[in-house]
Image 1 (tube, rainbow, N blue to C red):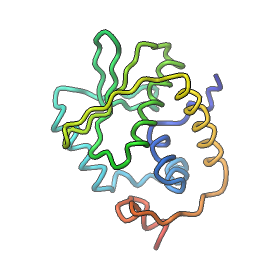
Image 2: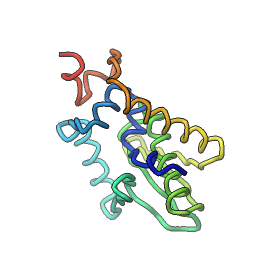
Image 3: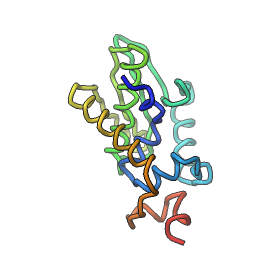
Length: 168
């Protein structure tokens, strides 16, 4: 396992599926999410819905919303809406991949919780998904180590914390 790949965090996996420009900016320490109303609302939703659960920061890379220890280790990601479900799924799968490969934890089940719509989706890390995660990590490293990608106008741009950097 090449440890330089594990400098990737969950936000970078998420942004890989949302916007390559956002991924590049965030990865080059241009972090504007603290200004985002959407991020603030998401944090409030998590805090208000899961008051007794605490989040876990692992190696300053993996920020799991909460963990339950049962027959298996359950890791939970809390999201506002399933609009970006694929990015949520791969962020969670990356957390599972990281825990398996870096912490030797194999009995992990992942859940994405959407409390506003009372939906919970279960995920398992398969060998096929592990290969996809490896490829995504490689692609992210290629994006980060190249020139900034030209922004693509998407519906979500208006709500993005980086909107002004790309379009004004």
